[in-house]
Length: 267
Image 1 (cartoon, one colour):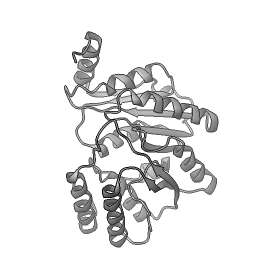
Image 2 (cartoon, rainbow, N blue to C red):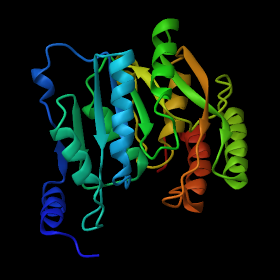
Image 3 (spheres, helix red, strand yellow):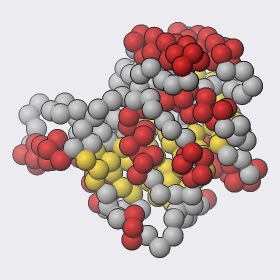
Image 4 (cartoon, rainbow, N blue to C red):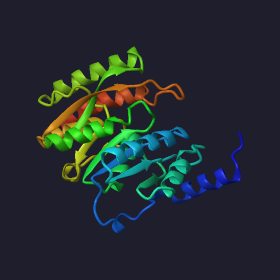
């Protein structure tokens, strides 16, 4: 299908700039938001609109002092409409900003670019593909604030992504807890994760790939943070295949060993 002239110009402009697009200058904010929600929207397409709308309604109801960072990073000339869509959403809402950079990494690189743009006193990160319920952001936020914790994350009690992915996840979490004892982390890669601004400022995240979730937890262990977990479900998506391929699984296990031996991520 041929792109319209407007679509072509939008994608061309984003590829040329290769930088963040913000709807509001953070320097102009009188006070920091209570919570920043970083939504990873890579290749989410039109589906991100409904997810953001639901998130806004939830935040308005439960914690009105918020901001949303939509991360729509992309590759040059990949035809992905997501950068244009998140930029349009941001232009129409004063508390939403869009980060639409040319990608120099995978999920970890996207997450770091969103975390860097966040200005809130607490920072949550969640995938925007709909597999993780938007309501979980308020669940982890409430647990963090009510219990005075440093970091809170979910763990998946039900998964809709099949037996293979579930088996890999179980094995990965067992190995993680053997190599990094003491956390007793039920589900290393589950999101949303939320942390205080102070915790984020102390972390030095290096991974540009899928290992960043584990890197967060390893650094949290080293910092001896007060950590909480809350149960969630992991929904099935049918509109696209999973981004977690065999190479990603290999990356998980290689990085666990590398971090254990050399105290840093390999990828």
